Amino acid sequence: MFRQRAVSAAVLVPLLIVVLLLGEPFIALAVAGAVLLGGVETFRLLRAAGYPALPWLGTAIGLALVAEAAAPADLREPGLLVAAVGLVLAAVGGFAEPDPRTGFAALVATAFGGLYIGLLSFVVRLGALAPDLPSGAPAAPLGPVRAWILLLVLTVWAYDTAAYLVGSRFGRRRFLVHISPSKTYAGLAGGLAGAVLVGLAAGWALAGSPLLLAGFGLLVGLAAQAGDLAESLLKRAAGAKDSGTLIPGHGGMLDRVDSFLFAAPIATLYAAWLVR
Image (cartoon, rainbow, N blue to C red):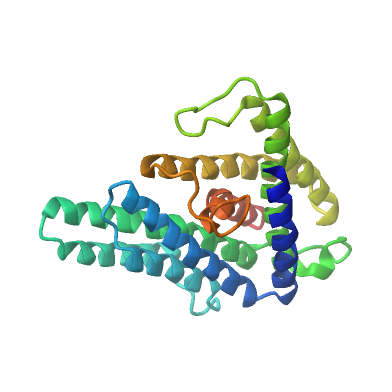
């Protein structure tokens, strides 16, 4: 399993580096691609779990949130407005179901699926809200957009990798076994330690407060774990081991970005707090 993960990372990391170097709008296009693939998998799982969602509409909601996040500032509308319109459209889609109970279930599942996969748009929003970097910061040549998105990615990856390595080696006591039997307290502690270390390193790279960025690492690590568990809950409901088979060692696209779905909004909120 770890070998498969390493091979997948060897392919994905160079692609990520290329996208970050190209910058906007390629970052938004990459996020939109992940939302499109992840949306297909999300709605497949929802249907397998017994929820009659409308996949095309829900995926469109997720893509609309990415488009809104990537729009120029003078054209950007509050994400809440896009979400509200998505809810209205999901309700209209539910009207077509002859059984009101099925129609309401379709409304709820479609709105949830669209907003759930649409959380990935906060990767783009993080770039838009990223604090400026001091001219003397080692990461200054990257610019704030690339630097903060890279920090998010490295923090989540550090959490996932450290949690896997520490948990597989020292994990004994497990938690939330009804959702994900492999999660251990040792893995949680190891993952958080890895995320905090990345935050401390970012204190040097971004010429910021090591304490504040260690807090960033801690909160993003916790959110990453919550995102992983949320997808596990969905897969358990659907009776599926993975969301797909797109990426060897990782399953589907949703299996690869699940941690970012919850981590990206927390990172964006933290960055917005830093510049207030």
